[in-house]
Each structure stands twice: as C-alpha cells, then as structure tokens.
Image (cartoon, rainbow, N blue to C red; front, top):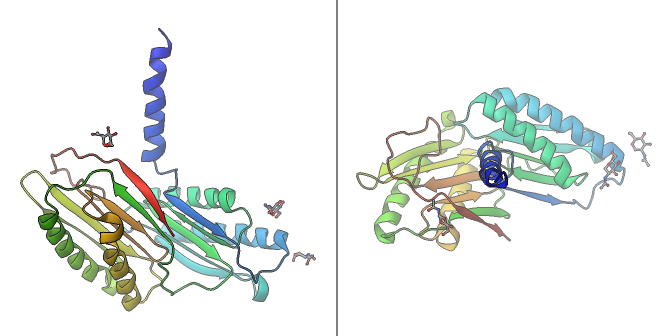
Length: 260
Ligand SMILES: *[C@@H]1O[C@H](CO)[C@@H](O)[C@H](O)[C@H]1NC(C)=O
Ligand SMILES: *[C@@H]1O[C@H](CO)[C@@H](O)[C@H](O)[C@H]1NC(C)=O
Ligand SMILES: *[C@@H]1O[C@H](CO)[C@@H](O)[C@H](O)[C@H]1NC(C)=O
C-alpha cells in the first residue's frame, strides 16, 4: 500500500527540479590550447572570476569582465534573461557557477545555458564577438497543424521583436505575442548578450531565425541557444509578466538537439 504514494512524490520532485531551473539546458566544456599548465593558479582564477561575475550580474543582470594578467588572463560573461526578477537571476547564476565548476572542472572554455541565465568564461577574449558555432536547440515534440499560416505569423513576430532587441535602450531584449486564433497565442522572446554591438546582435538573431527550417521546422515551440543570443517561441506563455489570458493547454514537452 505504501509504495503507491512514492510515484507521485518522485514525479513532483522531478517537476520542481525542472521548474526551479536548477538543471542546465546544456553546457559546453573544452580546453583552449595556449593556456598555461599551472592548473592550480587557473583554478583559483576561475573561482575568483565566477564570484565576481555572479556578484555583479545578480544585481545588474549582466557582467562582462576579465581577471588576471597576460598568460593567466581569463574572460567571463554572465547574463540573465531580461524579463526575470533579480531573485531568479541571482539564483540561476549561483547554480550556473556551481554547475559549471562541476561539469567543466578546470577547463578553460566553459559555457552553461539555463532558461533564466547564461554564463561563460574563456582564456581567450570573446567579449563583443558573435559566436553561433555551437548551438543547442530545444524543439517541441509536436508539429503545428497549419504550417504556412503559422510560419507567416512567426516570421512577422520575429521581425518585430528582433527590431526591438537591437535598439540600445532595450539591452538586447525583444519579446511579444500574436493571437493566432481565439484560443491560440504565439509567444516569442529574443535576447542578445549585452556585450554585442547592435549590428552583431542583429546578425546573431538572423542566424538563429535562418536556422528555424533546419531545427525548428513547423514545431509548436523551439529554443535556439547560442553563446551570443537566445531565441524562443512557444504556444504557451513563458516570459514575464506571464500572460494569463491564454486558455489553451498545449503540450510543453521538448527534446534537445545539440549542434554540432
Ligand atoms: C583542478 O584544480 C584543482 C586545484 O586547483 C585540483 O585539485 C584538481 O585536481 C583539478 N582537477 C582536474 C580535473 O584537473
Ligand atoms: C603556479 O602558480 C602559483 C601561483 O601564482 C605559483 O606560486 C606557482 O609557483 C606556479 N607553479 C608553476 C609550476 O608554475
Ligand atoms: C506530449 O507529447 C509527448 C510525446 O508525444 C507525450 O509522451 C506526452 O504524454 C504528451 N503530454 C501531454 C500533456 O499531452
């Protein structure tokens, strides 16, 4: 009799561990070749850099800094999604710093993606450079019924929010929604890392949208996670303030594709 209670509890736990954002959407760890072999020095530098990144970005939503000198110099960037609270931002960055140390250990190129934040450090200076070489795509398990109409609406919404994101005062963020029918609303959000110039932000978002047919093709939802920008659309509200007018319950299950 008792075991019957176990199943829902386990499911509940899994649900919350995803909902609170403690699991990363993905990460990348690699070793830069020119780096000093003094690992203990590098390890201490990484800890120092991460502490500074988390501290600054927790209050401002963004930090891009470097630490150390010459051979040992390390560059870091941390950013939260522009619509999340500073509490969620701070919690996400703390998880990101902890997880990336566990996953990437002392490696000198580390990146970690969450829905609410992104954190990266590298021994090479990457600040201000567009990087779309590595991508993680989360695609909804279901396809839309009327792709032609859907893609026309998606394209128009993407154009609108991309043009918002490149306006300096918006700090790389664009978000919006389109009613597809009485019960179906399309929500979308794009965000560039704030180190990018407006033209580079536009380029990152253009590459993401150009890749829609390759990865997101006719899916009910899709996320493109690059090191320089985040692009997402869904048929349910996902950005803040959460829209409560949407009445349709849509399947939110998605699967990841890592490329290359
Ligand atoms: C990382 O560096 C620490 C010292 O800073 C060392 O104890 C540890 O073994 C290193 N880990 C790896 C995998 O090299
Ligand atoms: C590694 O770095 C530490 C701290 O700067 C220094 O004391 C130590 O001598 C270095 N070790 C090597 C092998 O270079
Ligand atoms: C969503 O789709 C997946 C895969 O087709 C299925 O396993 C799951 O039960 C669906 N969930 C809902 C809420 O319909």
